[in-house]
Length: 192
Image 1 (cartoon, rainbow, N blue to C red):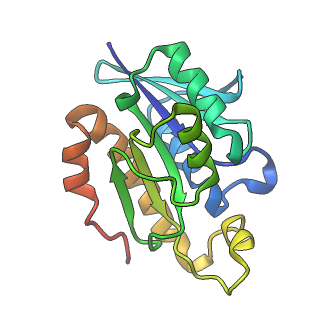
Image 2 (cartoon, one colour):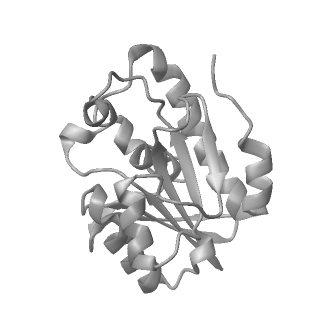
């Protein structure tokens, strides 16, 4: 049975629930919920196992806080013996508009602390990422507040659509590979 590690990036704690920075947690929650899984608290992460179409998905939400995400990623990848190309890291992205997602087999951390930590522990940036656009609609000097803030009311419908689409993306990557998923989803817009 082929195995996948799905890593949602975010911060633990009720004050971070459904913030832009926790988009990765929201996507992984939706995937696990759709497939009838449940999270348990385990080493460095909340972990859920989901079986779908003959594949096993180890889904994690690191409990290490964003800038130490690599510890949980590496621990579960090694423990479950998941090849690097069968991992998918779901991460918020300021450089992408709210109505976009971007799938990539590799690529820089683009200044994201969670990705930077994963990259430094793995010694490579060649691991698959699903970037969840959060836009950059904030005044100069207010980036941290924006990233750690909740979605604007007018964004919520798009965000819900995008979360559902990201669940499909995870299934698509597992079923047909990342290249096909990139072709199918990278150009889509999730605006109204």
